[in-house]
Length: 246
Image (cartoon, rainbow, N blue to C red; front, side):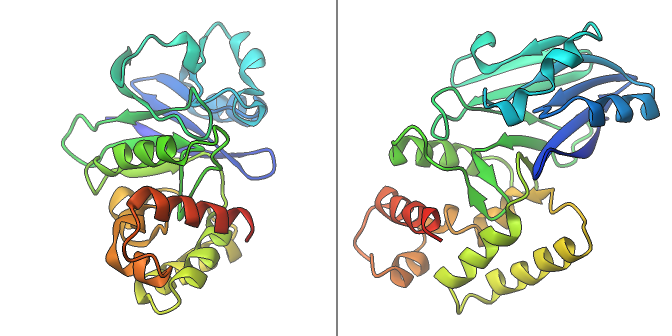
């Protein structure tokens, strides 16, 4: 059994403290001080820092945290294929290769040992209601990574790297203004934002139902964009360009 604590870092980043049996793994520490305070409260020993990609807002606290004696693993320091496992104590993460935002982006999937929903830490690949910018300039690569995440169990909890959720769902509602499920999700996110509450976790099932980028496969999205005969990748690329200009 593990627990996940969501830490707000920098302007809009999320950092995650994953704890089990007195040991902790930190994912994407944009800064160190919130992590150190959380560890002081919990009493857990930090064993490893994991980073989904090398952008400073996801690794900025790593050097200071390394001074506690923990390991720091960037994507290029992890030997993995398309899906590989790394273990820290009782925590066994599956490393998913998800290039697109950056060439070396990865996500970390943590199945639950007790049969309940697992967790996936998606960095800047998949957001609540959105996805990262395609800095590799390859929409097909990013689309393949999103489709890999879409194969996870629907009840998998999604912990992403930024709180862009309100803007992402405002965009989703402009793309599909008649989608009642998307409108309802927008109101949920708006209420959380107004209460200054985290908008994570979502679930893979929620994202498949309401995230416009994952909905690029659906006839409804293709109709909304006037792209009935387009490929899924073409629809995704159009949505990403629209969001870039939103």
